Length: 461
Image (cartoon, rainbow, N blue to C red; front, side):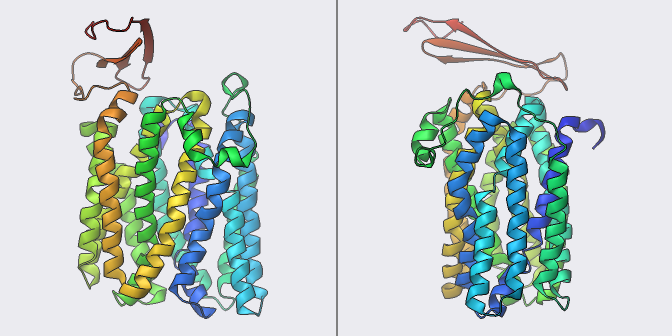
């Protein structure tokens, strides 16, 4: 990563890699473990939904606690939960009764979800240690690293599950990865100093689960709620696609179970290219908000295209377009959320965002499984396209609000080769006027100067 990547971000990027590797091990394994136990695709979808359903309850508490106590303790505790979940997953191999084995698999996913604060707290950690101008670059690097894991994880999962010990081999590899990650996390420094921590922590889960009330209490709530809703619809799209695509490889494209890893190999290559090349090219021209909206707009088109092919080559072509949409949306959405949140509430904001997303993605696999079982993969992709179109519509409708929250005008000021000034903006909100000065270059300077403005005073300066 060299000089292009802030040194302080590297521990979290390594954490992203090992966690993504552990998670992607399951992609080609879980649907066939469920089928081998004698259960159908709807049960598989319910098993997928167990993780985000549990995460829905835990994420706001973990995010709020990370604002109060620090990021490192939550990262360590959540990784310990991941390790325990894989131990439980391995234990299911030794249970002869299929129903009890399935219950153990479900319990392992619930445990992982209850302690699944890694993603939201890791994003808050990155927001603590990197400047605003580097956030999209770092989040895109996260996406590329996840792409590398997507290259390795499914292939490793397929290989280990094909051993004589079946999915126990996959679980063993995941246990080793999780244990190593846990040991590593105990060595990273705390990113949130005492001066920037939240003064208190509400541990009442009833209060925390009042997501609407919690979200309304955040600074910049109006824009954040729009972003949370857009993210929920986007992740619902991603969840529907992720639930059915493995089944469609086998049932629709005629790919053997052992060869599904090759499809994920291609997808991983797409993701790395799009995060490291396509995203940077487009983001330099459209900015974060324009790139986010462009990515959201690609998704419904790509999903409609995916519903048409019955052979591998055209499917992969459509999958590249879909992958580009994902690659553009994921890092820019993360970046915009962190920039819109108050620095004392970044963990809580990320926790609410994760919880809202988890609620959406807990429902999505169930719906996807039912639709796939009753109507097939083509209809499932069209359903996903409809959800993606809703996310895009909400994103475009929220454009002005998002630009205002970031201190940008409705018409973006283009980069000019002369001079250091990137944009000088004036955002008026009675009774205060906010002025932002952005300087180009590696060390971005952003100052907000609040000038008292009596109600009714003209907006022009």
